Image (cartoon, rainbow, N blue to C red):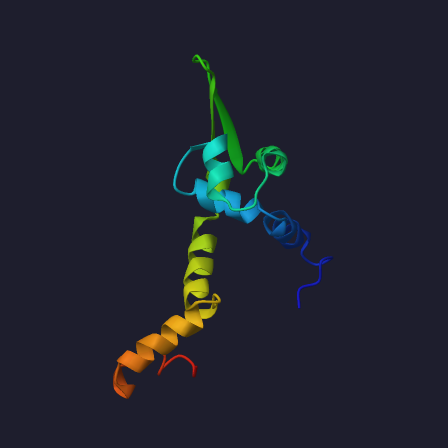
Length: 131
């Protein structure tokens, strides 16, 4: 186990990324710049107020940048900084891990249906875990 006193930077990073919605916001921004409404619509159950708070926090940490374009109407985009993009390998590993190990409610039934339609040797879950 990691002791917070021995690793305060690790503890701060985990605190920042584990704060509700922060990781999902960063994950969405990995694909490129987004406007506020796009972020709000892409993360289920995220309110505008909370999104605004999280964007300000991530901006203060230097993970995202807020670009204002003086157009009519004014256009504001949020994008990752180099510091934010440096998190990409972490999110790739989490995505790979989640694809292999995280089950969603419908996954078990889908897997059972696949196995029922396949022979024992072709069952997609025969090597991973019993169902």
